[in-house]
Image 1 (tube, rainbow, N blue to C red):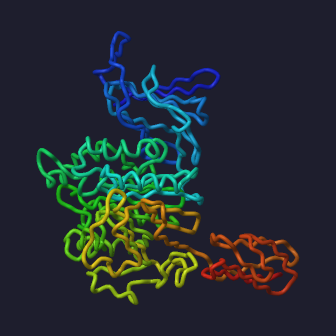
Image 2: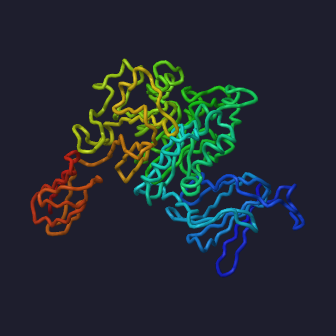
Length: 527
């Protein structure tokens, strides 16, 4: 059992000790001389939750683990210590406040390896809370090529001073074999400065992460003894939200009003079941998790292998992609998943809002499978209104392949796939998912910083709303959707909220967005 010491410094220090030392380290003495450790990896943030955070790092020599944390960089009042000597340091800090900015340092009991004003994070907001959240999405990123650095810098520039609440990995995180040295060079060294120390990471594995140099890929798929699972901590006990998976290959978490599922499309559970095997542990857990989280406003699932692609992989010919499409998607869509994010193909591909399409490319029928004929770009161009989802109807899914965060340039002769409204196979890029209340936006940002594709989805914009109010009393009307500008009739106001004072009878107020895509009518009756 680990020994964790928490010291909270107020006017005088209070010391709490949890657990007991392991027998081999039960009597640490001051005469023990250790080489001075140096930081070789991290810090990086894992298992983010509203009231806790896991901070990880690696040293080149055995050392105890110490995190100092506080709401001001000059006053790190809370100290968390793991007294066991190790090189792989994993410290969980709990008792934090939701949605709060914390500064921290890492090191040993008597020395500090890293600290400063740029070492900070925000805890996740309370579960269910609405706000503006930003989530980065990186697929097939770990190449250590110039394109990977360009994409990283483009996303950094796009963010500016805005905080990214978390970021997702879509697999193939360290080429070519997912070995620890490749993770160091192709992932941790690349993202350490701008991402890992302040943005919580929620990964998923790809096929290139499943290698075993001494045995085989097939062995790695069954054993799960790969660097990926040693390098990352997953919230398998439900500590970040969702139903506990008790399996490091797949898990779920909540970010405010968004529920995420990270799935494993390449490993074999119990040495036998792939994700497309619907009787396997992963699918059985997923059904329980989705059933328990239907109250979440948004549901996003992500994994590596895409059900539809004509990039450097062909979803009509590769059996694992076919199996996911035919066996797995019907279950996923049954639970009203809003967005699916995949990698594997080193291209960008994005569908419209669609449902019930499980065949090959030639079987795609836009009149049947697309629930909206709009591009969804919501940019004022022709036929670009957002996808609107209302309870009980229009419950479709948008599918995105974003596997070009590290490389691109190869695709099938039949590229693009007929089901995709936008595709790009030459430029590299990554996605930024932005959710504000009942509005979801996804933007694909290229290596040169251009946003070449985007779409918007809205929920419950209430096309008709009846209100009864006492005659002569003030009433505040609020547009149930986010827009750059609002048009109210009568009155012509441009703000999201207006104040009205009904004098009697029945009145009709209408608010629409500036593009004429979304409209809500308020029918007000007085008594």
